[in-house]
Image: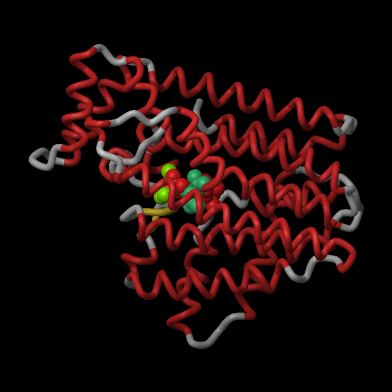
Amino acid sequence: MPSLEHYISIINTEITQNFLASIEEPKELYKPVEYILSNGGKRIRAVMTLIAANLFTEDIYKALAPALGIEVFHNFTLLHDDIMDKATIRRGNPTVHLKWDENTAILSGDAMMILANKLIAQAPINALVPVLQTFNKTALEVCEGQQYDMNLEQKDVLKLTISESEYLEMIKLKTSVLIGASLKVGALCGGASIEQADILYNYGLNIGLAFQIQDDLLDTFGNEAEFGKRIGGDIIEGKKTYLLIVALENASKDDASILKATINKTDISDEEKISIIKTIYIKTKAKEIAEKKIESYFETAKKFLDQLNFPNVKLKAIMQLEASLKKRIK
Ligand code: IPE
Ligand code: IPE
Ligand code: MG
Ligand code: MG
Ligand code: MG
């Protein structure tokens, strides 16, 4: 079976040589599309689509357009997410709404959503209906998840009781369902049954939960050069992350008061705020608890994959991908 690098290179070639060559005018609309799609990104979703297809067919080109569609959709969500999160850096570069302006990020994002649809609609005819149903359901769920993310952001931390289950439902919708759908769409394009495709979807949901908790963790404890985003961005935006929920649960009374008061403070610098909150995260072992949670979702994911009974040789690329995701927190 091909290696992970092989799948990544197929996606990158398709993006640069075919997809970007097909969008030209007006350049004000399409330059930001080119910018976001050629400035890196791990391509995990598109690769998952190809890998899943390849588990059921030799001809992975059946899944190439939908794989690209999912990647374009993901990148569209980033354009709008960065406006919503007031993010300044993505993949080590200025975000589209800063490099251009908000209107540009909105409209180029809209165009990407439509382009994504066009690509998804090129799924093999025998898989087209379930592929479109899966994609549309997922795309709407991502919007729902982003709304819950904002609702939680607005929630006053002084009265804060965010249950872990509320948080998990939010990240399932904003992040995990698309990872599940990437695999499901690939499997369907490759000729899998709905049952097989759904097992891969559940595998992806659990990988996605691990992935978003890890993203929260790296947002505070990561290295900016590797993470490509501003460290502490979630703290400054008042995001209700896994680290915050764990810290509020485990902090002493005094630390919990400091934590709550600090989040609301407007008279200290961003750096000071990040430092005070990070210290409490460290004291409450929020990082270690998050790491355990991540590991447990990877384990649950594996149980779903095992249900499909593929020999290990067939799972080489998916295992490489899992390993590369796990390595990000080490
Ligand atoms: C970022 O996704 C958005 C989240 C769901 C955390 P990725 O970390 O997959 O972003 P890229 O595409 O690799 O930059
Ligand atoms: C990402 O959540 C969810 C979507 C983009 C739909 P985040 O807001 O945590 O993603 P990053 O950290 O900006 O990549
Ligand atoms: Mg964001
Ligand atoms: Mg966000
Ligand atoms: Mg994040």
